[in-house]
Structure formats: C-alpha cells, structure tokens
Length: 554
Image 1 (cartoon, one colour):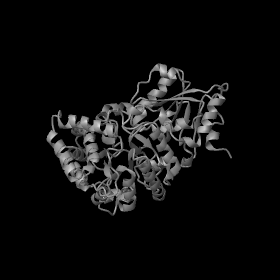
Image 2 (cartoon, rainbow, N blue to C red):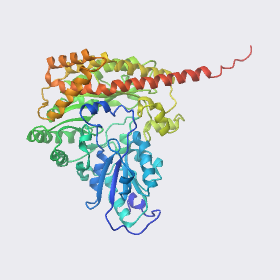
Image 3 (cartoon, one colour):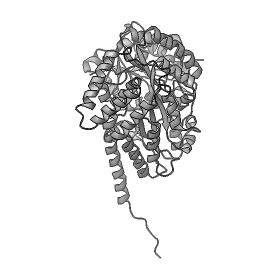
C-alpha cells in the first residue's frame, strides 16, 4: 500500500530531465505583518537585537536536506532579500504562519517572476492549502514524513507535486538537530528549541490540536541536550525559548527530561535561561514547577482566556475551570516563574459587559504582560466548523484588510464572524481591558506585585552566568530610555526597580523584562485603542444610517 505522499507524486504535472547536480537552496522566512503584539521591536532594540525569535521551522527542515545541497537561510524580518539572492538559487523554500501570509504569497510570486521553483510548507499551508495552490511543491503537514519524497521528486525532474503526510504521525525522535549555524544569530533576542508537539486539551478555538494532535509527541533527552550543545558551541549565551505549545502536555516525558537538563545546566555553569508555554494546570504540580525553576526557566506563557466559568466550559477550556485563576497564577509565581498570559474577548457565552471583569482578573493575578485579543476563528478549528454550520463566518481575511486594520493580529482583526452579542458591546469591552491593563500606573503596580509574589526556593537565577555583558548593556539602555529621557514614568521606573531590589534582588531579571516589554506593549496599546475607536465609530455610523423600522398603521 502506497503512502499518501507517494500517491500525491504518482502523477506530477510535468516531469523534466533528472536534476543531477545538487541544488542551491535559498530558504526565505517571510515577514510578519507590522504592528503585532509579539513583534516587540523596541524591546528587542534594548537588547541590541532586531527580532524576538529565529525561524526554527526552516532551519529544522534545512537539517533534513541532503548534506551536499547548498543551503542558505534568509529572514525577511531581519535581512534584505534581493533579486540577486533569488536568482543565485535553484530552488526557493519558504513557509510561515497566518500573520505572515501577505509576505509569504509575495515571496512565492517574486520567485516565480524570476523563474525559480518554490517549495512551501508550515502552519498556514497546513490550515489553508487552497491559498497556496499556485506554489510548485506543497507540503501540507509535518515535513519529517515526506521530505524524502520531496527530495526524490526534485532529483527526478518533477516540476511540482503535493505532499500530504498522514496527520500526527511524524516521529519527532527522528527530527534532526536544527542548523543553528545558518542563522544570523546577533539579530535575534533569543534562540529557540522544541521538545514536544501537540496538546492533550480540546479548546474549541485552538488550531494546535488540529495541526499536531492531542497526543503530545516528545523528543528524547539526548536529542534536546544535543541541540543545546549545538547552540552552546556556537558561543551563544542567554535566553532560549522552548516553543512547545504546551510543554507539560506529556508530564511524564518532561519530568524525565528536566533532571537531565538541570545536570546539563550545572555542568555548563548555567549558560542559558529558559521560557516556554504551558497550561494553567501547571499550578497544581509543585514538584514540576520546582524542577523547571531549578533548570533555569524564568517564565511561562499561559492561556487564561476568560474569568467566566461558563465561557471556559463552553469552549472546552476545562483545565481553567473549578479553580481560582488568580490564586493559581500566584502559585506559579511562588515557584520563581513569571507569567505572561493570553485573554480573549468575544465568546458567544459572554453575558453582559465583561471588560472590567477581565481587567480585574489581570490585576488580581498580577500579570504585567497580558496578550488580550478579540476572538478570531482560525482555519480548521472546531470553532470555525461550528460557525460555518451556523452560517456565521465572514469571508476570509485578506492582506488588504490586515493593512487597513493597522495591526496584524487578533487585537483588531478578530471577530471574523457574526457575533451573538452586539458587536459594539464586545468592542467596548475589549477597549476597557486594553485601556485599564496598559495604563502606565496599572502596569507598574502589577510589576511590583509580581516582585512581591515571586519566590526563588528552587530557582537558579544568576545574571553573572547567563549572558552577563548582554544583560548589563540591556539594563543600561533600558534605564536610559525609561528612567532618564522618557517623557512620562521616570519616577515609576526607578520606584519599581527600588521596590523589587529591596524585596528580593533575584526578582530583578523578571522585573526588567516586564519593564522592557512595556516599551512595545505600551505604545502598541495606544494603536490598538485608536483602531478600536475607529471600529466603534463605524458601528455607530452604520446604526445611525440604518433605515428606521416600519410600523403598521393603526
């Protein structure tokens, strides 16, 4: 029985002469749309970097290619790609996520215009392959399962082909060490690795389980330590982000890995500190949190979404129900881990104004960096399928609509469906959360409470070991911008630093990171408010111009 990938290649569009010479491959990482919550431009500048994270997916695929293929990686978020770069290659490989779609499509068209073949993949192709049908070689799933077939197709002279691997079957234990040496490393705020793929939960609005499944697949301990060895050997010291969508999705595996990670850190004098993403039930496992802290983890992103149990239950966010959310966050702080969190406004089950309730939870939990977005129905999710059945989905978001919105994420692009609650009420609730959460005074208040709540019984926090000179330069730049030349908030800045240092100097790393984040999130929140005010005005204008209802004559 042939595999789906082989069947996809059974009748390629056109087959030319075999390509005997190893190709020159240019891997291009498309730009993320400007104006994203996660772009953190000014924060990166404080570290002397240009962008938060490198293209881990591309350099992982690069490691799957034959060793005699000449591979080059260019990231359009930090580098300028020219016609000459594309013409110097035989094959262009590219891929990305939904917020990269505009530039992703541009790169494909650009390469075609210059007569070059394009191979594509990545999350947006997996979710919306119809958008990319004009590409030459299309991988609609995890590359590990089909990369050999793609390589053979190229060598055989095929002009194109579609590769549809069976979902959730890629063996991540066979995934190679990413080619970190291909990166322009000084351009990035941090390095990245991945331990697992998939998540055991069934959140209706999330596409992770649709792309990677509900049974988290993990790499071996030896694999992960070898990846860290590779980063260490390149001379990098500092922050490494585990990009897992839920690092604790397979607790047994991560608990087996962490003691070896602790040993590796100790043997190498703690060259890295780490962050990751996890579900809120991490707060129930004191042992696990202690191990993470001892391994050098300093922060975790948690999807909280809503303070309303009815919303959490309806959206199948069961891990957040039957608990005091603020208290759970505080338990995470007590392990030495700071928390970034995600919140969503616009669920069907919201009853009445909820803006203040969300803002209250952010304050009660003392979460400085809160990513608050309008609900967006992502392609391929259970939410989108339900809305389609109900006839409530809008047309697909276009590149033009993204440009018009002024931002490139769900902060303003959400609500791509007919809402049950009046749209104006949802927008006003969202505005309330943003305005309250990112006021300068409220932000500093939460940072100070974070410093009060952090405990370091198990932590290995030592700025002298993990990128000291880079961190020192960062503190100097940050203090100059926020504590000396800033128009507003200078007293708040120094007061917050003094408060944290007096409480426990080990909290300063998390405090400085939160204050640096405000360089971006503070300014970004103002843009979001402007965009939301415009949307509210548009709704008001539409209501005012709507024809009055006709009444039957008495």
